[in-house]
Length: 261
Image (cartoon, rainbow, N blue to C red; front, side, top):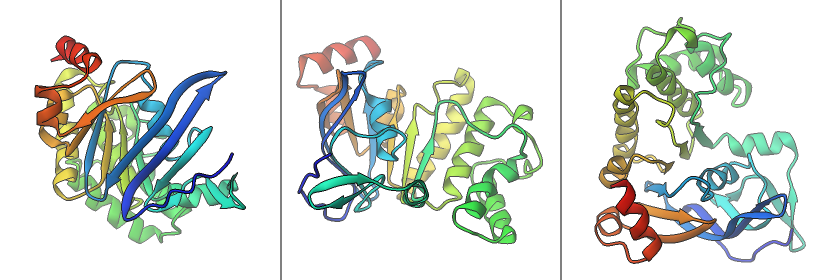
């Protein structure tokens, strides 16, 4: 892959011409995006528009086919040499990925581990954090997400909302520079959605850089600094939430919002 020459400043995320295809079918078509540190960006759009793929490319769970993607000034999965991008080795990718927290639709907790064990596993194995320090941090984070005292529980003993809050605590335990959320409430019963969104709102208020793929448009309107509407692998429209939701400028965005608002 040929490297793109554009340089980043102090951006948390910088995407230039990002492309991704599956079996010859384009999924991301030359995506350009700039996210500043401390911003909350919400990505909305219909199913199949490329939202989740874009998020997965940010931490190299999917390889990009073209363009350039930097997180906190560094390419996650590649290094540049003589004008071309070369994929890093697994341990190098893991080291850079440690700065990127990700929360998935499904909670992805280890079922054979307790809540505490789920949270301390990555800090101990990747960051080489001592167990006592990792456990103290895990307890602090469990209190933060409203689950103090549940350290010894197993995932099967928790509700979906509680499991997702554990997943958020697990991501935060790595002290990431940015948090990615891939439709974090889509697998939850409606009455459990609020408890997860409340934790996310608190993170936003504390200045965490967040990129959120979501169908929760009320959350996007209230919390996001900017909203991006994607369709067909393109960023069709973006802007401040009050502008995009109240006065979309493209026919496709207008049509989408007319059906979901």
